[in-house]
Image (tube, rainbow, N blue to C red; front, side, top):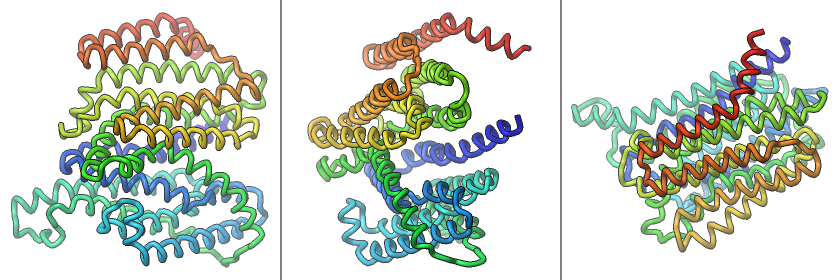
Length: 488
């Protein structure tokens, strides 16, 4: 029992530390949309999209390779040392080359030159923190891991609030305030990246203990093995990141320059409303993955896996409908500037896409417990190709609507492919009728509420109540059995 308690505890802590950075981006949306016009927020979003891609490239799968060899090598210090030297060397050369050609890099990435140095330094600091974070996880130090992650989020959030909200108000009230030396009008984007840079620097400083080793050694054979192991992970990571963020980059390239960043800003701000589904799916996945592996050798684990997916679909269907029904209320709380609301019609599409991604993660149990993880890479690559293809052909015609539909098509395809191959290699008795019923009714009611009745809150709330009643009636016996079982 103590093993499972420890597993649950670590899963909860790591899950909290994983969800918090996503929550930061969500919490900051009201602040950013309040103080910045759509074009400026579009610039920030575009840069963060590049951050996501470069983070995967600069890690080149070494984090996963670290776990693989840290637990199998006799000399763990050698694994830590080789990993640090490898990432330290590649990060140094990336930083040097990027700084030497920063103007060309800014032009290539369609980023204003005044921000490119911040981008380079933040990427370097984050890359240097990869192995220290992996080291904490490998040594089963979840509390320290979570504390450092929380400090990073708190510092970043606090500095954003200070620079973007408090500092301008203080200077406005007293122009001779001592803080005037750090206040510059129309400097919001730079303040955002300065906040990020300070948070990343402090994080690396807190992780400094990992760099204090008795002896640094570089094992060429071990390094070669780690790189070979990590590169496929990097390819899968790039494919998955393309599905998540590449639409912003393609919008910047395929829309007219005069409106591109403004359109990205509108799309990205409204996209954030779908984060409720993303956070639910992420928390569910982090909580349930240990169960998948711990029960893989038990008798008839497929039945339990099918039941878990049913639960996810029921809860996800409720969240989908609730977010869509209350979207017009949420936008007034999350997206404070009405200039952004033009992109609200993409919200139901993105929420449904995030739902499909969550189902995909549940369905992916088959290739994880059968050690066919290469299928995860293949499926992500298919999703990436769909994302790129639809965006490329349709952004010039329908703008960010193409990006929303591409996201839905990619995640729905990944979900379908995982189900198809799973049925072949590791059949699980999913209740397709129940899953189809809940998803179908939720999607139908969402479409009626948002598109037909134009977000009428009374009609939408009535549809949500009807759906909740259906869930209650259909799942009552099961909930009753669980409740009675827990009573004893």
